[in-house]
Image (tube, rainbow, N blue to C red):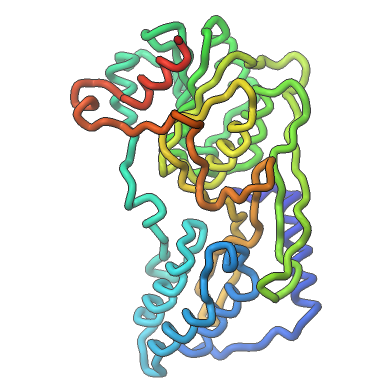
Length: 340
């Protein structure tokens, strides 16, 4: 999830405040020093320790016993990476010259629930349009528009959105498929949402650390989304947003905002979460550590770190047997919902 200038400035100010309020210890570039530096960075700056019920002191005791003076850098990396995995956070990574650790269980223990070729071949016969990161067209079943957006890292310009929505303007409903969308740029989230609202909305709230203590957080502050400027193509008809467990980070944020729009229904599986704005630091040996430092809540003040559920009665998985027959049961559910 890319940090916008506004959010980055807030985090930078918070980091400056933290460094001015307490002494910053120096750690040796040896196994013990690097381990302690990493543990302390998370202890003082990570934003979900309480929320996830993580006993960070107990984890220090468990993994600290594994740190030995004569261990190799690779052995130390494994211990540190395993310790970070206890956070169960897809935004938390440790990067060395030979590897970047990554917590995969936020999605690996769930069905994939998406097959891009299934849609391209059996619903569009490969006759769909594509611009930047969006595949779009009019589905042959009903008068329903389809937009598949694979990553919020793909920059979709205002003119691109105008062209897409103009092409789909005669449709009675719209499906926005963000399955397998791993996130990206939150400015793109606002750009998309702006086409589906008619007045300024409270998109959610942000909370950042204000001190090294585990309970030292700012008060939640609102962030908003405004409608696209006059003259832009807008969409106010019914929308279904399709999700799966690999809908993560900025894509998760998109779903958290869209769920409260009156014309929107969320269909599919619970999203992967990942609401923490990532921030980066470094330990003495030069390894980088990336972690969640700023919590993002939805418009009702609920955490979105653990994912967004589908709308009531709209949880559905991709049936693998039906997929072999050329049917995406999640997409079919969305089509039926919009054509009823």
